[in-house]
Length: 264
Image (cartoon, rainbow, N blue to C red; front, top):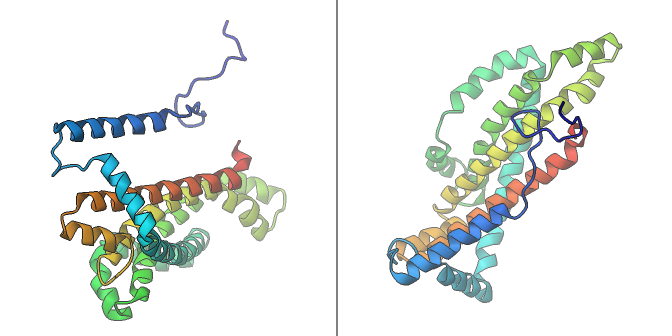
């Protein structure tokens, strides 16, 4: 007879995976060492991949010259403003679609029509509408964040367990109480998962927007490095974007731990 105190191994949904600290960092370090060895020995061509140590020196030069923050601050500002606009409106519209049949009938076909449109293709249109300055970049990021957030939000509302809603009704809870205490908390995991995807899309659109008509920004920095065939600077910009993506993912994970404590 098996010991009931023995932990259940991870087998899928509903079970908690055991965290292995340091494994991801170890894999990353091993890849860096392999890249350093390969580029140092000539096994990997310098035209294909720069030496990681050279990229590190490029970071140091960027920091010492002050260019790092000259490019990073505008990018972060555009990302935060645009993503906040798109995500806030997307969550609000998604909740309304999930709760009201009339709103669903009117807006779901519209969302379905604009969702497949490649948002980068709309950048010239936003430039015509809002000009070459910051507003067109905010609009592109907001629009790109809005549509996946709407879809994820109303899908999360639809997936809330109807048994819990009926239970709330049987206890005489008001419509507002059911929405606030059952529907929204039950939909929050899906909303946050959709937000994680939306913010990743926002970073992609940020780079695209900065490659058109921006003097400073990570996208503009990468474009300048690519036009000069400067692989060290190019990879430095790519690493900054990667770190930014990891930071966004970590922020969403922290928000999930705080908001979804009831699931533990």
